[in-house]
Amino acid sequence: MNLNKVHLIGRVTRDPELKATTTGVKVAKFGLATNHTYKKENGEKVEQVQFHNCVVFGKGAEIISQYSKKGAELYAEGRIEYRSWEKDGVKKYATEIVVENFQLGAKAKGTTEDKTEEKEVVEEEEINPEDIPF
Image (cartoon, rainbow, N blue to C red; front, side, top):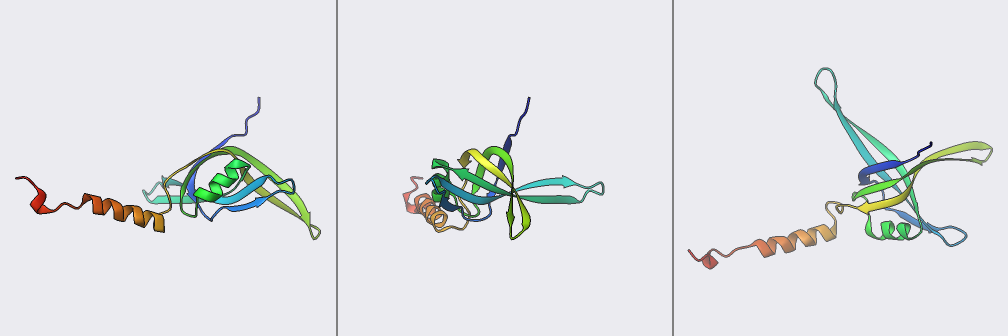
């Protein structure tokens, strides 16, 4: 039995780049950062960040490139794929996560959309003291 399955929850490190293959299939490439926190023997807290190169094809590529931006949370499920090619006589390698399923998370903090939404919530929550019935 064989299994190549990856589940990641992290933040997008760069805006997805949408392109198309020669056959017209949409492809989006983006980075995803995940972290792991642990304590050393002396009690010191250590946080390790891992950066993953991700690629998604088809309708998923269009959705991620449209609705996900740098800093946004994303759940990605897929498989690890290793590629190699030769350029100018030098062999190059890449490790990517081929995303097969995903779920968009919270938007990036500090975006114009988030500020607008926060402003609307604040305006709705304002209470005039004269409106209180007691």
